[in-house]
Amino acid sequence: MSAHNPHGHGDHADHGHDAHAHGDTHGHGSLKGYMIGFVLSVILTAIPFWAVMTGALGDTQTTALVIMGLAFVQIVVHMIYFLHMNTKSEGGWTMMALVFTAVLVVITLSGSIWVMYHMNTNMMPDMAAQLGGGM
Image (cartoon, rainbow, N blue to C red):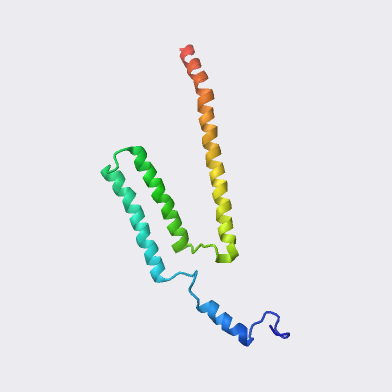
């Protein structure tokens, strides 16, 4: 960095770095990366569609678990190939924001399921007695 230019633009050493930063496609995506992501997304969509339409897995619970597992894999594929998320992008802040969001979603969903389960367990028997006694 020179004293005349506090940002370092125009210096010989920084010029090479700037050219590398603009020419570097790492994290910006390429046609090959987008095509890999697209093909994986199509496959990860077609498998659950096939499983549901043909009833190949038989049990609905097994089918639902397979679909949820493939949905999770598809989320990861989208984050890597289309959103270009990794631990190095933006100094790791993007990944930290993702982890924070995932923790909030897990807390919200598990808390909602817990509340609904306990409301069903604790409130429904009383309501059934009231409905049966009122008729």
